[in-house]
Image 1: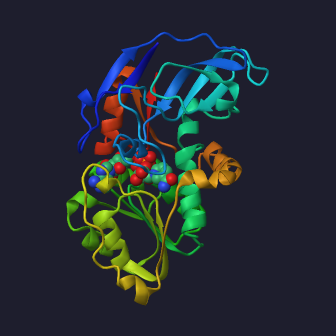
Image 2: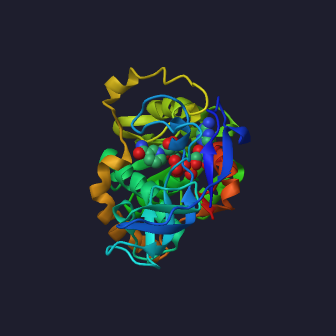
Image 3: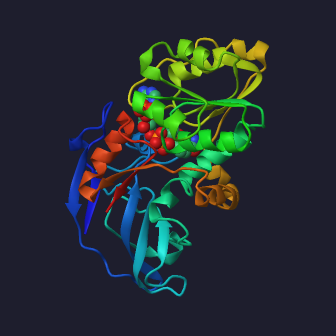
Length: 327
Ligand code: NDP
């Protein structure tokens, strides 16, 4: 089977030579283990941080070893009573064609949706949007909600959830005219702007003339500065990501003293602290998704050998919705 190794640590934007495609022997499952053929794997922005040799909330990837990450596969051989051949499973052994390990490392999925949905709307990004908007930012009906990275996996769900939860106005930002048209045309955003069109503060002011109650931050930098400037009194910010700063350092907001007079709340969060909300996500968002009220767009890249390209594409904004690699 084939797998992708980290060949060297990227400086700024990753390049193809940071990765290596390697052929390895696939072990036979031992007692208690299963053998899984991967169908689809995820590439996610947090993986960029793990490519640096620094301590974070997840340990760094090792050099010259296989990468890992979310994936969905099919059990082809089982030596455990807990799983059987044909079961669809979610697990952390992405970036490879085959996964062999103890059955408890794999979570059996109810095949109520296509496999890739469990890496997106019904998986980690979906939970991130759900928890960040409802629990961390405590969005209420009537709020004006702004989300950056709005055409991506998390952001597109945040905007649609806000609308379904009774937001008065939903505003998104993204990096192209086509994405902006997608937000207002397909996803029901009330307003959207292309952050490359000019000063983000001016663009946000135009889109939210009366200010914002909630900001869901996927981007950091000038987006966060702009949101502080446009925040209404008692606005709540969920700090989810800062993708503008993942490849190069960017300055933080220079207007944080506004937080005092405006009585703002800003709260960072990590989705894995909130797994107890997964059942609520599946119930509530799963129903909206099944009814077609939530759209879960995907950008699909074919072939394990193209996974590095999918990952760098994600960092450059080549995706609309969730970026996945079909194996
Ligand atoms: P996305 O699907 O949103 O993909 C990343 C997107 O980021 C790209 O499509 C691109 O869109 C945008 N982007 C890249 N560079 C910049 C930049 N310099 N400025 C603005 N936008 C940029 O990824 P996810 O939905 O998976 O993740 C979104 C955010 O949520 C990330 O910051 C991620 O780290 C964070 N996250 C946090 C979690 C947590 O537990 N706190 C869990 C999961 C995700 P465009 O064309 O619009 O530029």
